[in-house]
Length: 191
Image (cartoon, rainbow, N blue to C red; front, side, top):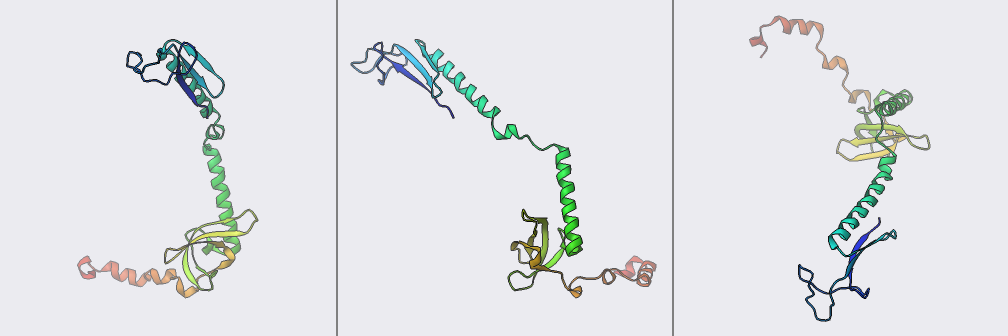
């Protein structure tokens, strides 16, 4: 980033580092008074003026030009936000990858599916947060164990839950006969 400065000088071109009153009268003996101001920039720009306000205004304007250039060439301006169509393409690719992994390893290996993590020698249950292929083409998973510990590991470190661990739909759904019996009773009798 370029930096700008404003310095004051005596008539003999020596820098003036003396204190002055608000009306620019020298407060220290030996100071002949300011003669001009020099605004400069690390890019090589210079401006000499007898009016401090004008020199300072031009210095600020020059500095702001550098800021505009920096914003115009910043990486965020060169790589604008993805368009909705690009985001949709990425979403479709993610769905395709998730489907391929589910076909290979099973439907339980989708995000939200339950499995056992076996990579540490134990069989800890948890939930998949994401499944994907890494840069080497190895199927990976982001997984959260039931104790809340996150795990990032290859899918080969996971196993399906045994059938008894996951409730079947029939045990959760009342039978048709039971449903008819409950439906025929008055609400007060069910409570």
